Amino acid sequence: MRFGLFCSPKADRPGFGPETGQGFFEYLDFNVEAEALGFHSSFSVEHHFSGWNQVSSTLMLLAALAMRTKTLRLGTAVIVPPWHNPVLLAEEVATLDLLSKGRLDLGIGKGYRHSEFKGFQVAPEEAEARFEEALEMMTRAWTTRKRFSHKGRFWHFEDIVVEPPPAQTPYPPLWVAAGNPHSIKRAAARGFNLILDQYASPATLGERIAIYSAEREANGLTFDPMQVAVARQLYVAKDAADKEAALVRQAEYTKRTVDVSRDPAAKTGSHVLAYADRKGATEENALYGTPVELARMIEALHDAGVAYVLLTIAGGVDQLRRFARDIMPTFTLDATVRAAE
Image (cartoon, rainbow, N blue to C red):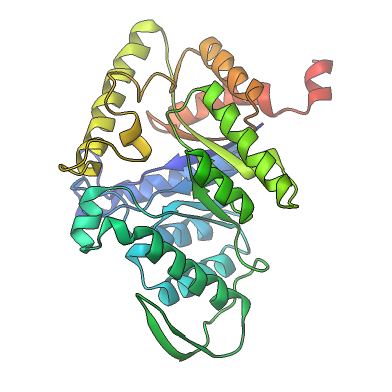
């Protein structure tokens, strides 16, 4: 199996206001340590108007991380093209891909938080059309070196050539977050890699991976289990009491996300909102437990077909080191080495 990080950096931290940027500096240090410990990648969110200083300039933060790392894949989970000018975004993505020497994984999505649609004054019903037009513009920008013009529904450009080109050919791997069968099939047919959410059970994840694999093959595309990344919250607990206390903290944090995501006029929604109406549903599949318990949980993911896990690690660098020391080697060492041991 392969392990990466799923990060939600903040500018502040206890005792340091957002104007210090201390949370961002600690994020950079955390990821440098992760690379040294053998983690494969680090994906970071993009969010706006949250009220708790979540990272809003994800590509800039990843550029800083690119300067301090050598092998760590740098991912977005996800950039939301409907919030951006697609030409400027294409230029920034290509620049980061060059600065990182081809280590960028570009996760993209349509957005799901009500507070962001409201803040940007973008109608939620326009999200898909904006996403498609932006994606068309960006991929065209990365794959042509000739000048072109574009007159679309949302953006117009005249006689442009987007510079520089990206390092990866034809452009950085595209990842999308999807959960329902229609969205998964569409991602597979378009050759996108897939990010599955924090909250689904191993059985559900297995069903979704099977849908994705079958659809890729139906469209003449090969399937590699590493094309699917599953996000999971992680806490290495000392004992049962420590685990339960950590789950309570996580539930409080998740409720904050739900509160800014939900449209007051709607009863349901995507992403975390699909799990938010049943008590405990957003925590029941989190990787919270002792090392022995975590090993069983990860084995269940592996048995369901999960090969690549992105971890949101609660508790800082000590938790990162504990996972890397006590759990990760069981699943990352070559099978022949494990058998010899």
